[in-house]
Image 1 (cartoon, rainbow, N blue to C red):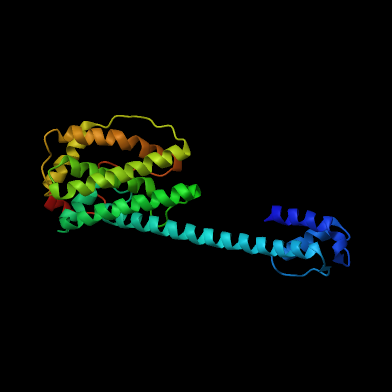
Image 2 (image 1 turned 90 degrees about the horizontal axis):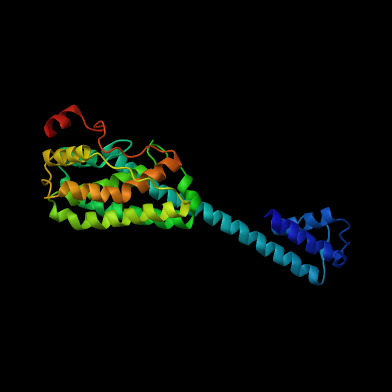
Length: 274
């Protein structure tokens, strides 16, 4: 906006003779241009000839800039609201920061395992929306989520872990939707990490921890691990986990734990699962 005021100020100064009375100084020219840009019309001079078109162009540019600014702010607010809505739904069910096994156990303890199918579908939609909005407006990446300690990378990690665990156990009804979620979430992590030019480390995950996750899922009432299910889970996590962890480090937000402290589950619910 300041550049526009300065630029139109130069035009007004160049056409100062076409104003009645003439614009005497450059500072007055900037004032005339600024008055036209914000459509206030406080100038004490009348434009004639080509100067009239300069005033019209300045007014049009001013309205355009303000319209784009308001539209951008509304779009940012909407995008952040949709992203944070998904984060809150996950953290409410699985703790803060969220984890896949806590989510599975919570749904099992509440007797609503059938709802996991919708979690996978909506999780995939959430990943697609975040990718579209954050790739189009990279500043959104740095907006922190309210009402939660976990940032959006932790929610993404929990969703990816959820999909990977389901792929590693015998849950044929959920498998297809889990694969689609994992592919969408991995694409989100890859694209944003490339956009931010992050360095990706490739640490290995403790297989004993992964084995505990599969055992806890089975105790919660889900399918038993498939043959080579542990290797499958480790292979999938090796693909996406380092990228998501790099995003978490870059934003200074806590990563999603593999084995949480069962936050969000009551003692009675835990007793039913063990």
